[in-house]
Length: 121
Image 1 (cartoon, rainbow, N blue to C red):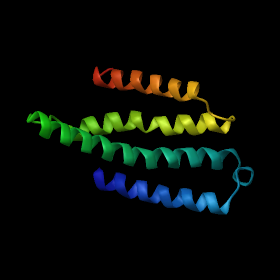
Image 2: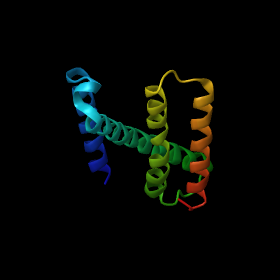
Image 3: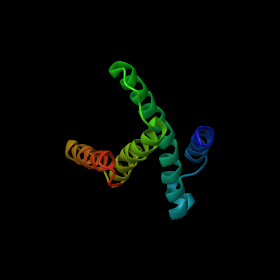
Image 4: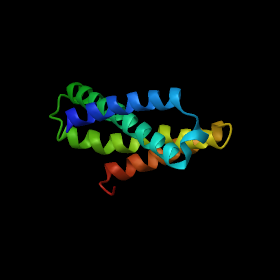
């Protein structure tokens, strides 16, 4: 699963760069914009899972505990954290983004991370 996520993240990065330099949003239409957001989510998912795994490994070394099921936890938290840049991109597409909107995204992310920590999501 790790190799597939790395491969998909790299592929989505290349497709995003290709889309940004080849097309305008009006040329690709609604489906193209939706594909752009999906590709961005896959890219940020790969980055978030890597960051979460690094965080959990370092935390396990500092606490000198055995980290239980680091891969599963990093995928759960990574899927929630990868949503934040997408929410900011969506907010930016409607106009300027303000501190209030960033704060709202942080509150939503904190609530989602809390739900993941309690095994509700």
